[in-house]
Length: 175
Image (cartoon, rainbow, N blue to C red; front, side):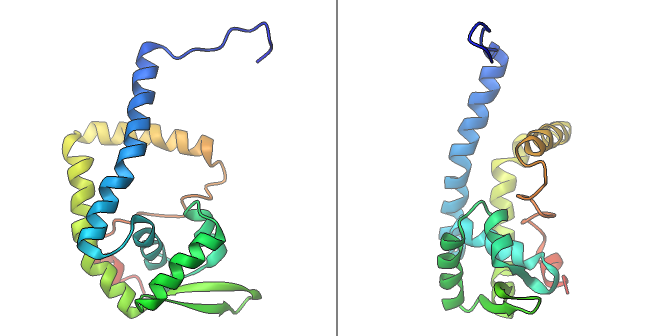
């Protein structure tokens, strides 16, 4: 924008939508975090890491990919993986294709814990989001958020695949 151009201010409708999006962005993580801490003994971030591993081939992902896909630094992810390792839910392995890289691997115990906790988590997501929307609203919101996400992440680096809310039988039957 040049110095002579007027800013493209938000309309009242746009501002209302924007403030609602900001509100959801700020409030949703805390609501989900509370449920996961209470029911699963996990932070939202820890649950997300376990879920991303459950969806990967052989329940294995490069640590660098996990960091990118969780919008995290490698250092923060490493601390979280250390906590998950202490619980017996994740282990680290050298990457067979690159000796400098490390894989995170979901263990059988981690998969079992995730499968046990997934129903309560998806119920909380359903309660907070889907129960208050009509199917057409879900479709419209998905389409709209998909466009925004494509603008923010044109290479689709932040969302590598499916959902972190798979049914337990889908998690278990992955391999």
